[in-house]
Length: 181
Image (cartoon, rainbow, N blue to C red; front, side, top):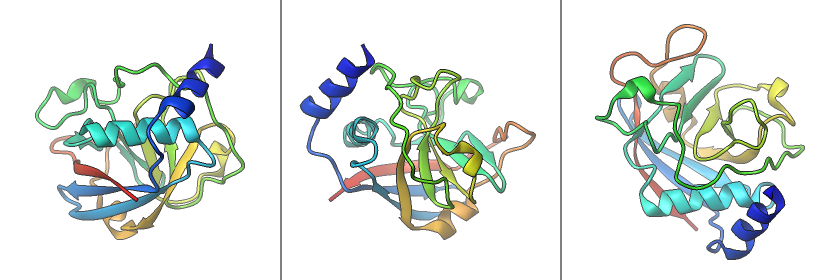
C-alpha cells in the first residue's frame, strides 16, 4: 500500500519546488529559506509543496521547540494561531500518512526532517528544523531539506519548556509559507 501511495504522489503530484520561504513572526521575526531535497524524499517534498501552495501552513505555530535540539511546526489541523493550542502537535493534514524515505543525509544544523509518530511510516504535515546536529536521528526520520538562509531567525524562535519543549503562552508562527523556484 505504501509503495502505491508513494508512486501516486510522485507521479501525480505537481512539479517539485526547489524550496520554501517561511515568514516567521513572534519573538523571531524574519525569513527562513529552505532548499527542499526532492531527490532525497520526493513524496515528502511533494506533500510540503502542496500544503504550502494551498496556504495550509500559513499561521501555523512552532508548537515544540527544544533549545539545542530543534523547532517543530506544521500541524495544519490543530496548530493554527488563534486556535486551541492544547492540541497543537497532535494533528496532520487530510492526506494519508507517508511511507518513510530514509537517506544518508545527516542531521546537521539547519537540516529539516519530517516529524512522525512511533511508526516510521506516519509522517504527514509536521516538520522540524535542527538547531544543532542530532546524528541519533540519522536513518530514523525522513530528511526533506536544509536551511540556506535565516539561521539567525531560526535561533531566535521562542523556546518551549520541559523535556517535551511545549511552548507556553504566545508561540512564534509561520505567518506565510511560499513555494519558491
